[in-house]
Length: 79
Length: 401
Image (tube, each protein chain N blue to C red):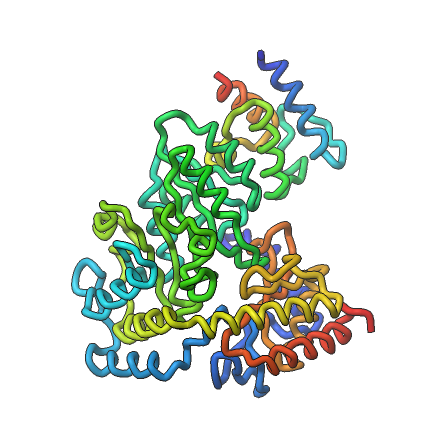
């Protein structure tokens, strides 16, 4: 799966958590723009992990602030 | 003015807002005099204590107090030293012996607090490159231990066996794995399915740590905790516990059967770089632990109290943290912080103390009135507690008038 396909799949997974229908770009932040609280983060990360069969540890999550960084991290973790 | 305190501004404002309504500060209560494990004087009023974790009521046990006084006379007020230098007295070895007997395990290591026990064992066992898989509702001391050790931290949804297994499966081949669970989760008072979870952890080659802080003394046939109750204590690599609940003093510990366990005394920083417990504290702890081995009657009465309170509060119409009583903690769910604080204050005016618990300590942003029962609460006291909840609930508008 290339970056574009991964990005599309992640965008689909964000939808149910994007209650306010915020427009998703690489610069969209999870804490600021999407207003994810810690429980939402857990559920959202679990959805990503299950979809791509990867682990995104909390240490790695700390480095991921926006959508673009998440797509990059998933592409890298998928190898 | 902007400085390093600025990040606390939202909390300062929330607190000022709450106190400006005239409500008593729920986090500033003073126990002016303590009469017994279940009664204290607060604001000049005799108050039933229902939020102390003093599950077995050992704080005023005459044998426990006598042991503490004797140790003060014989060994002085403090050790002024680390366990690995001048801070190991006969009493520290004696309380570790008592713990080994209590749990039927080969090794016991005593820390100065329960917080330090989790901090020390977790950070020392799981380091850089290792993986810690833990329940999202874990205690702050567990999270802090994870952070301090620099391991990869992978949480899973509370008590969700399948979510735990998925994460264990994805850990890279060859990496060290530690699964961290609690017997009783202290916010809602619910227990973990340890039997199933530990089986899965072991199948994936993980070591297992179980924090039994809120079960010691009364859950399980010998009061060893939830792992004993579910028949899997022998599968647990590290049991973490505390002296500040059922034991009735302060301190923390880890017990284990691992043959290399003793090396931790030299490499565990929260054990090495702090002063050991005062002689009077370890003497009271050892006496209390030995008495808890024979506490079957008290255990039975505590369970009775827990069932009575759970049913009484549910019948009044309160929303509780668990469908059935699973421990000595009964959590009453409040609609929000403002009404939770109002209810807390109404209870205090009735002469009843419970814990007001709020985010981030609570799961899912809940405000809770957390009740912890004591084996020394009489059946009459429990009925009185239910009556006070009924009156306060109406006064605070939580129950229909």
